[in-house]
Image 1 (cartoon, rainbow, N blue to C red):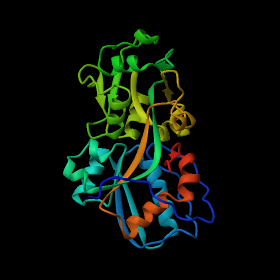
Image 2 (cartoon, rainbow, N blue to C red):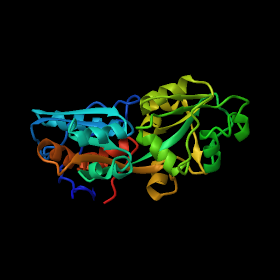
Image 3 (cartoon, rainbow, N blue to C red):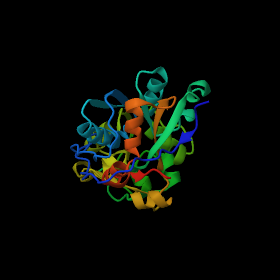
Image 4 (cartoon, rainbow, N blue to C red):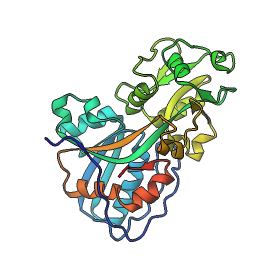
Length: 296
């Protein structure tokens, strides 16, 4: 069978790119050229799925295609579940996911896929700026808020204001990861003051505009200067949501970033996945966009 995690070996890269920080929610830096050692393959592929991974993969795609004439790499969102379903169906060449295929797909479908782990990523709980006095949530407080047991910010040291919970759809890897790592599998409240948005970028916008709101977004979105001033970012169990704490395991809301293929990759798909593991991406682009390199 073709399933099983594959931690890709990178290309030997002679020089590095100058990577800029993510310029706005859901977008990536202006493309910078990949190095001359990049393996250029012509053709057209699509990678779709996780919006938490999208800023990184989109930036890498722009750098690769800038260096490689005749190569087109399209990067779409849709959520991890959508990416996994589409790559199984053959609708896309790469399914980007925050979660493992085995946790989302039926075993026969999951067994068709090859897992390429390209980064480690973290998420942060964020609130609207009007939620003052709250800088940290414990696991139990988080469970109580997300399940609807706590419905007013004053219960956790905040203002006398109703909590508006902004969720992702069921297909979201961000939602699945938070539910697993923080909520211990508890089901979120679906009535009362709850909303649903379909991407990390949409969540970022909704939180900034909705009084009393709370949700979870990827580090890449929160650390974007255009977004950070609009949101409150919270600690989890007293740990700061930083790349350093994520890398050491001090901050627990983190997981591998996966790029799945239906069988072993070939052609442009393989070349682009190799580029994702190159020094251009792992050493330079990844830290500039608030991810951590894939474990070796």
